[in-house]
Image (cartoon, rainbow, N blue to C red; front, side, top):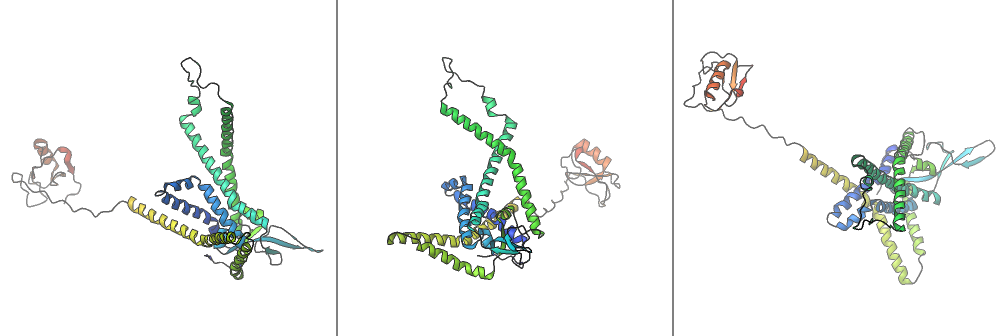
Length: 403
């Protein structure tokens, strides 16, 4: 499976590099989500989630090693048709021409910069930068978060050792039951203190290390975007590696290269025929898994993004307020037989039969009267004069626009 993101020349665009860099994090989120869903039905999968960092590091170790061995690119870079090339820059002088490593933009003249295949040392160091360093970074992040939570709890509730460290428990004879601790307990206490000290040092230093790493990454990405350097990250700069677009011939030769590597591995099998058959079957199974790993993992990322969108849309629909149509107005109150009849002219007050002054309505019925008339009537009879519904003077509402 191959994604081509456009652009011209051998220099990848900034968006290609950014997409290749963000793919491992999306893949990890997809796998974590999938395992979390499966753990609801198979509780033993929670053991894998307890060692999430180690599981993902082992998976990426297999994928990155196989990808660098067969395509000279990382797993994510190979999906976008990119290849890693060692930078070999030739500098011409008056006396001679010698070759050396130098920092130059990727779009330097063709006679000054040449790309060669990766050396074995560069492949090993690439695995270190792609797998080992992210693993240690995630563990440092975990230690920092845990120490930060412990510091927050201590600021709220106080240290546990200070609250309970001064309490002594004695037996019936007055001797301490905790006396005579063994040397093993002292060693474990010392070890805990050392680990606590290391954790505090990590908690103090990690923010600065993280800020420096993010700042360098941002600086390299900005320079790469402005064509000021050909190295997208500090790791590529240290290794002396440029990421280039693979040519059509290189993409066609990849399958033949993989076939040659696998045929050589099969020729190295030693032992009786039955052992060779077993080893060949294991190799075939491993090759099949690696061949379909890219398609399967990309499908997992797509499935994760689709499910994330689906559940996010469902949550938005559930949390969004339901808009109902306005209810119809209630039917007008009926005039009581014993009540005061309504005048034919709606502008007249039913109580004084004169044009209304300071019109006011009774909230329980909605009929309009003069304020003085309805106030006296409700104060005396505690009801609406037309409908005879119970009312109080607090339910009289002043109208500032009379119809």
